Image (cartoon, rainbow, N blue to C red):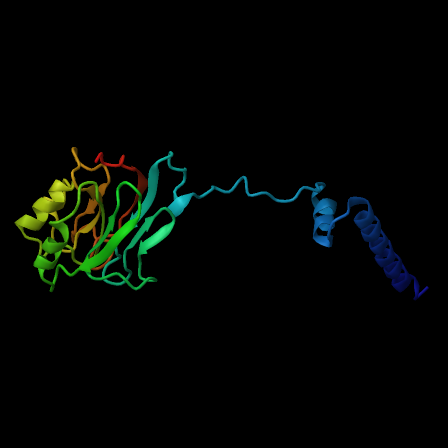
Amino acid sequence: MRLAGPLRAVAVLLLVGLTWVLASSILGGDSSTVVRHLFTGTNEEPTTESRPRKYKCGLSAPCPPKHLAFRLVSGAANVIGPKICLEDKMLVSSVKNNVGRGLNVALVNGVTGELLDSKSFDMWAGDVNDLLKYLRPLHEGTLVFVASFDDAATKLNDEARRLFEELGSTVVKELAFRDSWVFVGAKGIENKSPFEQRMKNSKNSNKYEGWPESLEMDGCIPLRAPLET
């Protein structure tokens, strides 16, 4: 009688093992599939249909043909650098080691979407003339991507603000000490740019001590038709 308990346990284990073998043979597949079938009553593999699909630069929907997908992220305080992504390629980021305090700018060919150049301009301790020399000679149709980091406005003068206004900015004239700013403009734009955000530096609303929260903006920019020669 003392062996009844152990023998019963052995019998149960043998029965479970036999069930496992039979289920594997009937259902096919690996053991995890068999277990899922036994406990859920289904032999279907998990799908990713329920997960939100991400497109270029993390957009939630694809851009139309002949449009460029982009995402801009301004710097967080003076700690985390900004990001500029275009067509799933990171143009500016801390990982690429090409960010700096002030204004981080990427110039892109508006016809081909090709990166022309990227550079940062220190608007706290730098020389605004470096920025002016960079913006003055832009060719018609050049796309200009801007993401702020730390302080983007202290050294901005009237000419620098006017140049950004000519690129389509509506808020640069009000941009102030440590404001967060992201912007996409173009040389020769006829209307004001729809791609611009500003977060004002304010003691009452700042997310970080002394700095407003980081801004994030994405969208689709239409490519320009080639200029007639």
